[in-house]
Amino acid sequence: MAAFENLKQQLFKPIDASSLVVFRIGFGLILLLDVIRYWNNGWIAGQFIEPKFLFKFYGFSWVEPWGGDGMYVHFAFMGLMALLIMLGAAYRIAIILFTLSFSFVFLLDEARYLNHFYLVILFAVLLCVIPAHRSFSIDAWLRPKLRSETVPAWTLWLLRAQMEIMLIYAGLVKINPDWLRLEPLRMWLAEAVTTKDLPSWMAYLHTHDWSVAVAAYGVIILHVVGAPLLLWKRTRLTVFCIYAVFHAQNHLVFSIGIFPWFTLFASLLFFDPDWPKQVYRRIRTWIKRNGEKTQVSQPIQAPLSTYNTPPLHQKVIIIFLAFWVTSQTLIPLRHFLYPGNVAWTEQGQRFAWQMMLRDKRGVMKVIVVDYDKRKVWDVDPLEFLSETQLRVMSGIPDMILQFSHFLEDFWEQEYGSTHVEVYVTAYASLNGRRPELLIDPKRDLTEIKRSLRHADWIMPQTEPLKVPVTN
Image (cartoon, one colour):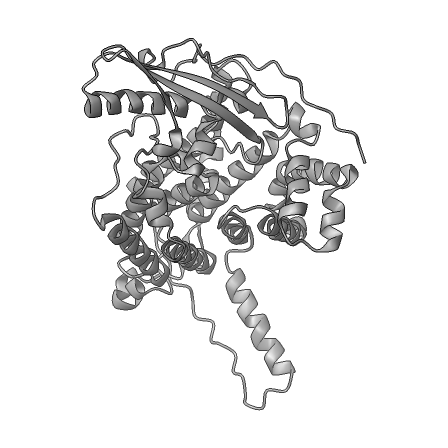
């Protein structure tokens, strides 16, 4: 009981709010720039308006894109909410509406799943309950009673816990036979040398197994060992600098959007809660020492205004913290409920921080049998899907199943067919292996219902990993 009271005291003690404020501003700015990027690159139409079919997450088949110019309005609204979050204006409303609107876009097409989109949603949900607008915000300026220069310590520790869970799992999942034998990292780095304009020294390192091995095993150490060391003041800055180099190289080599910068920025949460003020004071001192002619007066250190959490709210918050940390720890483990290699079956692969682990390349032949008209069609998926959707679907059994059900409905609506069967012969290569059958080509996929159970129509993986000639 004494231990629990001590924990509660630590969770609700006031800490400086400036670190949380900087994170709120950066969160809004990064997401605003991402919305602008989607707009400028034409991705809104290309990803959500033009495709005839969008893949759905299980249980969210009802989520459909807006008609007409609705998706453009939606992204404009989402960008406005990100701006309000950054400014701390109508913050509570803005962060809730942003979370809902961003989640809506996320759920529109499973083929567009990226771990950093999932991470953004998790942080957005947490920001819905964290008072990140009590300082340096328009809300605090307009409502003096709201203003506080401190926040409860749990607000910062909750965000840190989410980062730790993500980083540690990102390392643990790489302790698998393929990664330890340098695949698919070796393939990707070799491709990057031929497809990207990399510095000569980087190209040299990417084509030698010893350096690839250093990178592959170093990433595991960086995440599994380095992430906890972010919590220790003596090692924090060193680990952060290593992460900065790691994320900068990821940005140069891989096309992974905002993930490197968002993750690196979120890593600033591990520094002292008042680190922005420390940086500001050091800059002022440096300016003064370097000959500023005007007198730089020292700021008057007024007592910090604090926000006290009512006892009832404390109980609710503690329950929420326990639920959140427990669920985020367990959800990535659900793939152990399914037999087989998760990189092959894809069951439990989503929301588990299975990042940069598999290179899956497939080819497929889709046949529709219409027994009413006694016809057989060879279907070209590109008549309905984008090239990106097809590339992703060719390696994911559940998406192939979704597409088969779509074809059944399409044939019923377009041709009035009442007895349609769909057969797919799909071959996939995992991490450079020889292609092998991914699903049972003899099964009529229209007879298989989507579920969270083990899919017995997925063929077992049997091909061994190729061992290339070492450099």
